[in-house]
Amino acid sequence: MDKVQKKKMMYGRFINQNDIDDNKKVVVISDNIYKQIFEKDEDVIGEYIQINSINFKVIGMFSTGTVNMGPSSDLHIPFTTYQQIYNQGEKIPFMMITGKPEYDIKQIELDAKLLLRNLNNIHPEDKRAFGSFNLGKAFGRFTGFLTGMQFLTWFVGITTLIAGVFAIGNILLITVKERTKEIGVRRALGATPFEIKRQIVVEAVFITLVAGLLGIISGGWILIIVDMLVGQGSDAVLVNASVSIAVVFLALAILVVLGTLIGLIPAFKATSIKPIEALREE
Image (cartoon, rainbow, N blue to C red; front, side, top):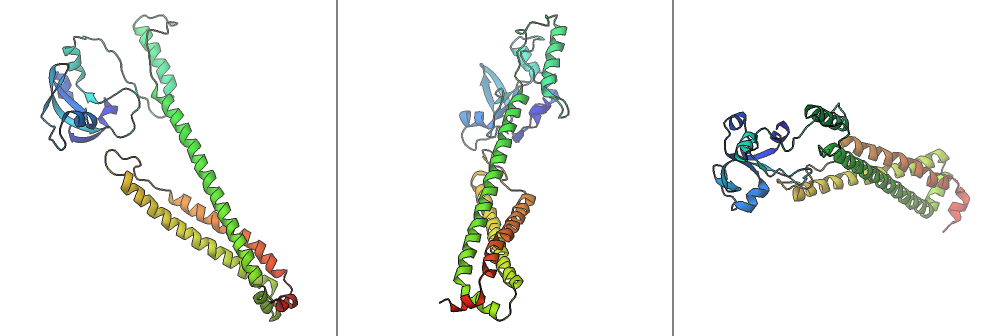
């Protein structure tokens, strides 16, 4: 029950120990059940609903969110009430077992089944006595999917950075070609090849730095808009969409370093221009 109590309560409260001890006919419903039974904005706490022709008092409502894995949990009643009403005695049709993060969830499943077999004198080789559904395996597959998506995101992001840097390099090459006479004049006036290279590289770094900052600002605004559109309310698709500050600065650093390196190509191209030929060029 500890796991269930972590649900996001919207109104009222969850089932407590008094409800269990007194076999109370109370129920906690989900927002999905509320939408099916009650009118919009109707006060649900204290109302009665029928479950298999038996009246239960609504004491709370919780949000189901958008992700639903495992058995349905739209309604919750005290287990003792369930046993009494449906004449179940000590029978337990199913149970939920949770494990601490430091333990292997698959091994917990095997150990639980072994314990149940020993308590009920069931043959160790009987595979049909108990069924189970391990959410740990489902979460493992989901985590693997997220890892793959994260790798794809990094790959696309780095590829985009490289493509942008090469575009800047091409622009600088064209700029150097158009500024041949200017470079020739500077060389004739005594500018050293190092100074010419430094000028072109500084221009490359400046362009990449400005482009990176503009990208960060526009990306931040896009995340704010996405959060406003689909990140609010109980049915939010993306909650608090964000990017790590460390990742942002890493991308900016990569962009500046690559911009510096790509700027060396037009820089060497500029220093290869002979002053006399540059001055003759119309």
